Length: 68
Image (cartoon, rainbow, N blue to C red; front, side, top):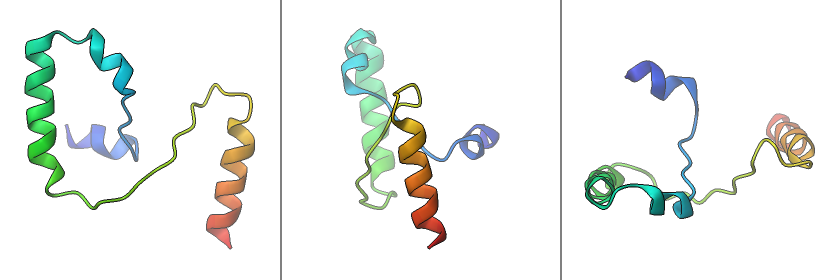
């Protein structure tokens, strides 16, 4: 399980897809997420799908600014 956490830096879930999750499972998931959130810093992020035509440009800008 720890390996899964290290393989990707972020976990991103589009909230509109949660509507497809069975209600009982969604309630359990949101309850656990709420318990975990107290340990997390309060950051805000901008997400970009890899398959968007502009994704490579955005990634290059981010990497360039991180090096600066």
